[in-house]
Every structure is written in C-alpha cells, then in structure tokens.
Image 1 (cartoon, rainbow, N blue to C red):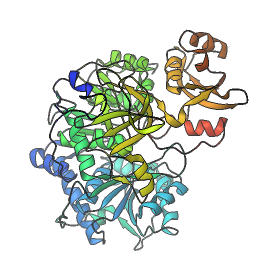
Image 2: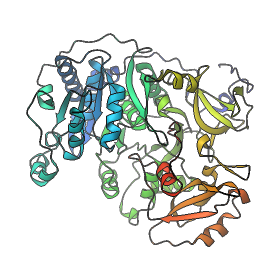
Image 3: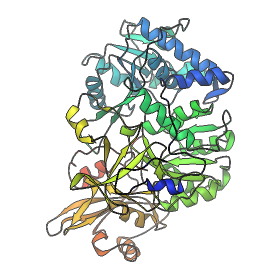
Length: 572
C-alpha cells in the first residue's frame, strides 16, 4: 500500500477501500483509439450501438472509424490538427471521434446548443479548421456563419436520414423537410458518405500516450470565455480503466448502457462511451432528452447501466405515471454533474432496485476523481473515495501549499494519471491550477477519517453574510427535503447591511404548493440562522445546461447581475 505525503499519513481510504478494487493498480497507458480496436478484435459481431432501433456491431463501427481516418488524411488532416465535433448522440459521433484519433488528430468537442458567438470563440481558440455536423438547420446554419468569418475551412456534413432504420430513413426528409439545411455543393463542404467512400486503410500515426493530446475539452466556467482542458491519450484511457475497475462485478460483453447524456460532455464521453467500449458493452444512444421516450426505452430495451445527472433521476422519480414503466433492469448508476440529493437517491433506488452512487470530478480530470463504491459503504452526502492511483488532499484556502488534516475544510486538490496536461495556450492559468502537481478544483470540501470526500461548495459560490461563511449546497440539501420542492438553487444577493444575503430560487413539483413562510418554518429546524434564505424567488423551472446541470450563472445574472468568472467543476 502506498504511503501518503500529507499530514494524513497513509491515505485514509486504504483502510476501507471499495471491495474488489485496488488503489495501487498498475496502469499502462495506450493510444485512446485502441479501446475500439481491442473490443472489435475480441467481439466484432457483438452489438455496439443502438440508435433509434438501427444497430451497429463493433466490426461495423471500427470499419466506419477507419474510413473516417483515411478520409480525413486524404482531406489533408495531419497529426496534431484539431478537428471539431458539433454533433448530438449519433453513430456519426462515435465513428468520427475514433476516426479523428486514428488519423493522429485531436478531438475538439463542441456543444451543439452553443450560440454562434460561443462556437466562434472555441473554433478560433482551438484552431479547428475542419468539423463534423448534421444536415439540420439548427446546427448547420451556425456553422455556415463560421465558414466565412473564422479559420474554419471545411465542414463534413452528416446526413441524418442515412443513420435511421427503415422506414424512418425515408420519412425523415419528408416530415422534417423544414428542419433540413441547404448544403452548398462546393469544396468547403464534404458529405460524410463521400469522406468514407474508401477502403479504410489509413496511415497509422505514432502516439506517445503520455505526451500526445487526444481531446480538447472546453470548460464553460460560471461565465466568461471557455478554456480548453488538454487531455492526453493517457489521461482519458486510464480514467476509463479506473472506472472499469470501479465495477468489479461488471460482466464483460454483456452490459448495456443507456446514453442520454450528450457524448460531447466529458462525463458521458468517459463514463459511458469509453467504459462501454472497454468492456464490450452496447450503447443505446438517444439524441435528446425526452422523459416519456426515455422511460419507454428503459422498459423495452432493459439497459443494465444508466449514468446520468441528479435532475434526470429526479424527473424520473417524480413522473406521475412512473408505475406504468419497468425500470428494474438497471443495476448500477453513477450520478455526476451536480450534487445528488439523498431524497432523489433513495427514491430512484427504491423504484429500480439499483445502486445509485455519487461521483465527483471535473473536465480537467478526464473527468472522474472519486466515487462512492458500488458494492461498499455509501456515506450520506459524500462523493466517495478516490479512484485507483488517485490522491485527494485538502489545502488551506489562504495557503494553497498547506495540506490540512482530516476533517478540516479547504480547497479540494487531486493528483493522478487522469489529471490534464494544462489549459490550451494558457500557461499562466495552467500553472495556477496545476500548482506543485496538484489539480486545484476550486471546490471546498473535506476528507473524513475513512477517506470519504465531502463537497461543501464552490469557492466562488460561497456566501459571506455578516462575516459568516454560508455554503449554498447545505441550504439546497435542506430545501430538497421539503416534499413540494422539485428544484432549487441558492445564490448570494447583495445586502447593504450583511454584505451578502441568501437567496433561494425554487421550482415546485407539479401540483404542489409552498409559500415563503412555509419553507422558512420548514428550514428553521435544519439550518443555522445565518444560513436561512432571506429572499425567495419562485419559478416553474430552473435553467439547465444540456447535461441537466442547473445554471446558477443565469440565475445570478437575472437576479443579481453579471457573475465573476470561475473554473468549471463537474461535481456530483
């Protein structure tokens, strides 16, 4: 067992580490695309993707990725070039992702819901000159503007109808004609079918997994310009290995993962796509979140693993006709992206009989640093133990080099093979974030005596009211205990007397009622006086990212004013 270098001595989690999981596991990094190569070599005939009832085997996905690689090389893509993916969950995403890596290039994940201005920054910052997108107007029209005003020089256009099963492939152009984009026939536009019209014999490129970048994963932050987390092949490959080991009872070649989280998001990219391929699992891809469709798919196709975000689990548990659906096929789930309320965890586990555990990480860690064990103790409110080969330390807020003893609150830092190489073209910010080998997360938390990590809050979200530190997460946890509260977010509001005061933004569950006075009375037994919300705002729903994470920056901008920029965390 490895010894720690902090005042905590031996890593405390080693005393009671997840059964069947070894913290000191030896990992050997490989090129990231070898995940697909190895899986196809062992189980080429096994189902790999299920997209709206059209199925692809591992051999078919590998063949398509190889053809993408050769097509990109023929189009002039060189090792180290950045290639963008502006795609929802489709087979195109998986094939293009691995084809880019095979060509020696770097994947740049782009959020399809971003506005043209946001996409412009990412394209310019990353140096993307070629990207993949769909032939739907909602996506292509934004790309067309970039072609005339950025360094983007070429677009690979993926035809939606070509990945749909019969008869959907025939009906889609007719029923959705108004949603299709008009694609010019010129040198700047290359059809996916034309790109892949080759024998797939691409020129393999040498890869140093530790040094060579695989993915530029942009972090949105609370506001401000996004930064590109430079993830090497080793970062992402080993994080997939770490998560695989976290499932000691996984059945190789037999698991089915439901993927409604967008693959362009780092959590789904690693915990679903990479995990599935590394373990011969099949993925059910859903291009967007529709609750009724999702429940029907679970009932019909019976996935065994369903990683998601708390708002999604809460939506399922609150569905008025949930008894009409069979969710009992689900065995294991990891919740990420935001804090998981204990009430949501309990209700979802009761519905399914599964084990729903909370994990923690951020884009800069590819993304997972810790997780509650799937077959060990889950401590209420904890985000679990560090993954294998990962060390978590708590440092003082006023002295980032001073490691704190167990139980004391400070900034969470992490070290491990999954930690990024730095931020793209931002050496000063990189040096500050990766101080003395530690990844500084910007989150406040503590480790208990057993090495379980507890998140208190974001450093920049902490509210200072009359000199007292108020952690929004604590207030939110208390609010979620009220049966009428479906969603909530707590933010700081300016106050002439206290400096800041606590504002609670609340969305009530359908058919439920709760007044400000009722919530105040409910919270009095659960919160200290300085933590009590002084202002309530009621809404039908709270704004969310595509992953389902509540966007506090929108609420701050609406109720308080423009927030300060801070790093992004994928806390969950």
